[in-house]
Image (tube, rainbow, N blue to C red):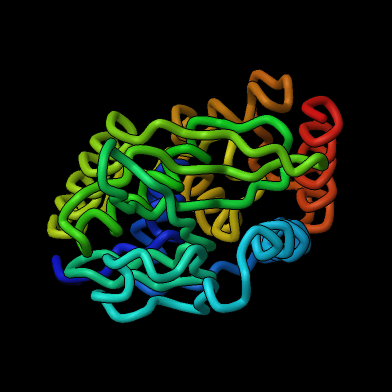
Length: 258
């Protein structure tokens, strides 16, 4: 385990929810509880395709580039829309869903690229905004300056929300520094079960460790979630049961926020 690991979108997003999950992903661990993450990824992919089509309709074919063009073409503002560009800089790799050109400043036209993310949920969270701020952070390290705003296209109506980036990019930078320091440490982060666990591919692993340690402080969130004072040691819900529970929670979120 070394300090030179590349922080990707998946690792950064995991760190926002659970430090142990980010640690496991950097170690290359594979979780056995993949049903809910796979289902959630399917929702995102199904939402992304029509959202991208809407973006494409705003530009002519000659103004659209698939991937990341040479730096000179990027800085010249030659392209209006970049689809799925991958930004790799020392220590970071951002798989950006889209970058859209925007004009900034006054007087002679100056161009910046606005990161765009697609979120199926109608209601955005701070984690959604930090996720697009991570894209902006990687872009700033590539170009030497940060875009002033990003956009998130979300919900059944494909609503576009503009996200002001300066403070969020600073927060993302601090989180990346914290994650990098954690990675350089010889000790793994503490195991803390939380509300993300039912949707995590590592839930069985972490729950087993918490049970073996018999540390009630590790399972407080699970007990509160289930309305229990204690968690039985001898039994645990099946994987299918946990999957149905997590899916139902996501559906309620989508329905109530729509």
